[in-house]
Image (cartoon, rainbow, N blue to C red; front, side):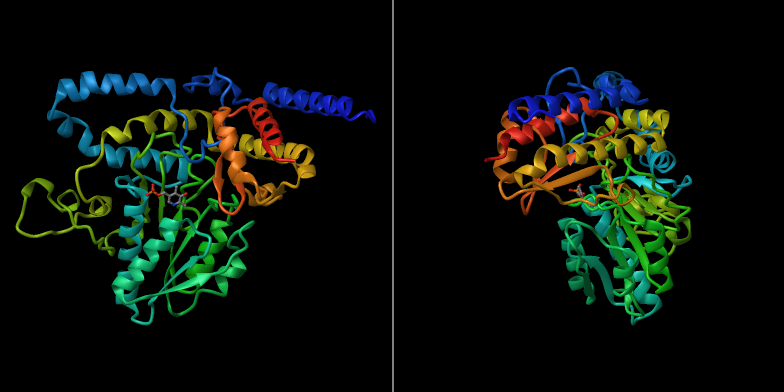
Length: 420
Ligand SMILES: *Cc1c(COP(=O)(O)O)cnc(C)c1O
């Protein structure tokens, strides 16, 4: 390389550009990117793990729904299709994204509300079976809503929270979980992929650790569904919830999904006893009797409009396959780290995610004291990552809608925005 810094930079950029373009050329999923709205612009989107981009097909689906289904069928639509949608789409999510056989997954409320319903139901069932089981185990770095809910449920039910301390650049491993669970544990609440570091937990092993202690476990799949392989049945999950507006591109505020393993369904009583979860919805009976199976986890009228967009992404994921999506996801995060090492490390930027791809989900966090201001500057330039305290720039690389060239362009913009 030249000793002239300008020439050296130009040579380095040319090498990276050639690498990005070779990776895009070899990428078997690259042609899917153009199906997303806005893919033709120069905007760099690093936030598909927070709010996925819409597919162009979704615009037609929404239009058709208003004109034909809602406008044409009117209230007949409930009997003809919509009543079944929480279960039908739930089964599709089960098949396509989380390894769940039919009859165990529904789409309903927000992740927050579904977490509340399932954690409370599991806590009550566990304590009823064994009064010593009063603890809910959760890690200090879990997503705020998960931590807040667990604290609220413990307070409401006279239970206790047992906190797992965790390195913010990593996550909870089997050893840390084993030292937190015991004869007092009712339920464990963990994220499969940590929202901050991107740490990918070995969910099968940690489920075994919880079960060996007699505890149940709920997996939060918000950052894994649609991005990394999940085998809810094969890994013996008890319960799971996940967002649909992240890697499933369901749109802002689209309803979440809940998984309850067959073996637990009829023993769990969820606390928001609404008419849609009752044994005979239209009997309008004098008192609540929970439906059999997954229907009992519904509460009120399902948000049908919010369930439209995710159907297009689910079809696309089924076509592309989670295995191929994961391969591209690993390639994207490996490339992002390689570029960050080369362009950003010399400026004091550190990797705040696992370096080992087997321990990493679909996003990478880069840390530097100035990242809050850097993020604001990038947004003005149509480069959209997000910011997570302390000093973390989160680069979400959604495999179906992100290219390697886009990744390089975005990281070069980060380089230009870091104060010297
Ligand atoms: C995004 C996210 C949520 C969001 O919950 P909402 O009820 O949809 O706001 C919950 N948990 C985790 C781990 C998340 O990443």
